[in-house]
Image 1 (cartoon, rainbow, N blue to C red):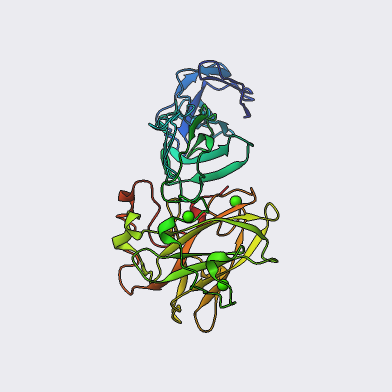
Image 2 (image 1 turned 120 degrees about the horizontal axis):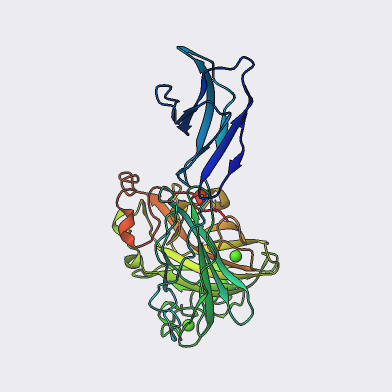
Length: 394
Ligand SMILES: [Ca+2]
Ligand SMILES: [Ca+2]
Ligand SMILES: [Ca+2]
């Protein structure tokens, strides 16, 4: 017996048809199951003498399968071939930006972007991930393109992603666990203000700038006066860290650098590493979009043998980046490779800009793994034990 999937989808009903048995039986029975379940042969969903039936009232978002059997008295045939009626796919509702700073002026440089909760006509579907895109309005350059499975309705824009006095627009879309994708939200926009921390506008917070006596790269030129190097005092320490991007590094300009105040990191008390010189963030403009920056970071205090190169940002949390880092034997510098839109670049997009927050860290022997359960308190922060880049893809 051959069962034909003569589906008609109007208001989720299905018409099945099958060829008649050679010797006319007493009748036919149709059985259904949902995906993952077995047939219950005690309960046909249809029984009759016709060789076609129409089943109504089926759920839009359930997978069904059907077989038919002929019967005569107590005798019942084997199953026909099975035909399937796949679930309809519900597109999640278009997300809506709900950030309080929508259309704001003079905005802080690390705003929090927020959207309404995931919503779908399919009540069995759930929110898998959100893609966040932020664009500089003056030239349409995409500044950030992140897809996150943890920052679903709220995203802390990482430090140094945004510049002073610049208008940005941003949009999001939701992807469901069943793989359907919403429309993009209506773009929302805001304008950043002037940073009070960098009065002279050289890209370094004024209180972190170093005197002309500092020469971490030992080239006889004051670091504060070098074009291809930026140097800062780290917060709460007499130490300094410098980023060097000489010609041949793939970098055309270091546009900003700042040391992070570790107290501003929500999960700081559960940091898996000691960070003797804290974390520094920098923004590089590259010679080629999508290129690799080969830079050197100098330290006033040498990194010990056991040091790892550690990154932290609000999207990915703590990451060990040592695979792209080579420490000097004396521990006074580390060579790093970072790819625009690839490894090590927080903005997630090939746009000629690299944003990197990192520092050397020494594992504190305990608790590296106790963070996972508590990290969510940091408001959209990543955190957890060394989540790698697999948390988000782009
Ligand atoms: Ca400054
Ligand atoms: Ca120097
Ligand atoms: Ca980039």
